[in-house]
Length: 327
Ligand SMILES: [Zn+2]
Image 1: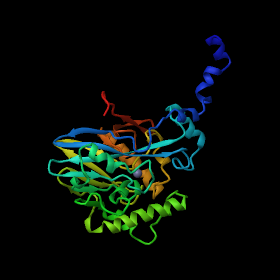
Image 2: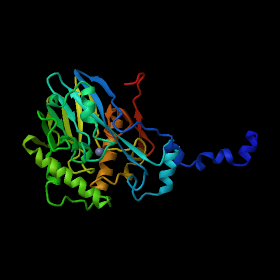
Image 3: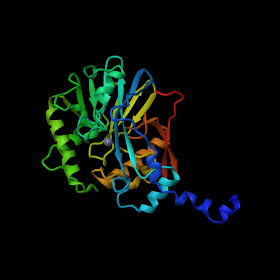
Image 4: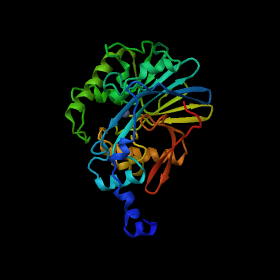
């Protein structure tokens, strides 16, 4: 059939809109759990940084976990325009900062809290030349299981046995009451909510002797600045790593998809403890990152999580940093 005839029949013009999303998802092939062992290494001023994977968390459908309550047609259109399937596969990119005298872990992965697709950090760290006992400090962005779950191993012991642990005072206070307040979240899954609360409370209780509680704007070790970016959780922290005039901003769970919440910061995530505040914070911080052309590190965006934020129309876009060679 000639091209003209195709167009006449509306086949070509209608092609992108008619393409179902499922075959794209089927194209994503995975190795067996625990088979990914790569790490990414780079420098920031005098600091040596490594990214190690803890695995991934696959949401088989975008909604309702992401953009809960927003029009399905608009979500599908945005996914189609960006060649994305109707699923979100979150990376778990763990950053390690080597200052020369300290090895600082920013978040710890899931440990055994979320099943076999995650919790790979302990196995992968030595492959990057780092042994758990070498970690001197752990900075936590917040107390969700995929960020602090790795503080305890499956037997309840601390693999980072020489580390001091830092978490925002506001975050600690939120979780350590009998019933943390989820009234402003869109999370419906009661079982998941109970798991999240249990892992936070058990882990923070067991590691209490090692905990240091920080406030908004505090700095650590002359290379880390801690700023609260509340909403995802009350003490959710954005960590700026700095050395010799260079900066890298670790945005933790400000974003979970390279497209959805960049185009529409208000679409949010079911896991946001305060959905509206998270959206407002997201828009504000993304605006600052874009305006100041900051180098960004993201815990959940595609490996190894490095890129920049650019303003686009009423929202933003993620510009992933590419590399000529594989890790
Ligand atoms: Zn997370």
